[in-house]
Amino acid sequence: MTLALVGLGVAVVALVAVGISISRGRRRDADLIELLGDGAAVEDLTERPTWIARVAVEAAEAAAKRLDTRGALRSALQRSGIPLQPGELVVLTTLGGLTIGALATVVTESLIFGAAALALAPVVASAFVKHKIKQRSAVLLEAFPDALSLVVASLNAGHTFLRAIQLMCDDVEPVLGDELARVVAECELGDPLPDALERMAQRMQVRDIEWAVQAIRVQQEAGGRLAEVLQNIGDFMRSRQEVRREVSALTAEGRMSGWVLAGIPVFLLFAIQASSPGYLQPMFEGWGIVALVASAVSCVVGLRTIFKMVESIEV
Image 1 (cartoon, rainbow, N blue to C red):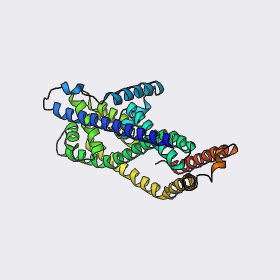
Image 2: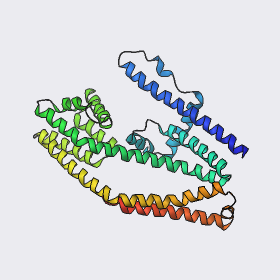
Image 3: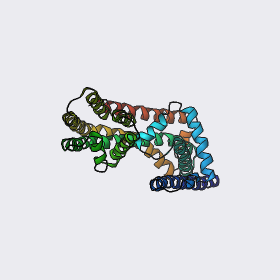
Image 4: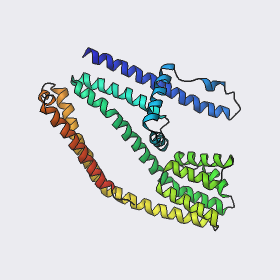
């Protein structure tokens, strides 16, 4: 118990220290970007987080590069909008798992629950990143048709396509506005507009936006009225959004049932262990461990099956 309390304290302190250090680095980078636009000096760029956080993040970054050769983790973080590098996410996930594991050990007086909590940390982190990706994609899908309407209005007013995109960067959702501002910056550096839009679609990985960018590229190469093309694309995306909302409403009960059915056994297990630590002791010995593992696998398979059935409807 004493060792678990000490471990909990150390993990909490390390987690807070690394989190504050990374946060300061992020704020410093944002401030420097803003200052450099006004001609400030660049010597502050050499200022970095504390050496402990730097060493931990660099080691985690190297390990992430060796294990993730395709860069899937970095791509997922970019799509989710989480302002972290892969190494930073690995460090925070590890420290968070150690903290929750030590806390679970203290509360339940069992190392098995602490180890289980530590093992669940990467799963929770992965689920959080996927949730942020899904949330960001939903925001992009919601904002993109309105953005196309603004572009159509600007084109009808006589502006060029690039100027229309530049004018609406501040009038749309920040998520889409940031991506469009990046497109404008790339074009100002000399890249063709269709190529910049295609890279934006690759970063977002949203099917509707990819279709819209392909239609814009075809129009740029073949000619025609761009305003009419964009108006048709916007109407098409709005129709798909209505169908998605209907499907989401019809499948909400199935998703909630899956989470409830999967969460009840876990909640009861921790509740019984916390209230009566000796009651479940036979389950942590011999065949009891096998039964617990089989139950956990059954819950995961059942939850996965329910979500596969619910999410198999594509619009």
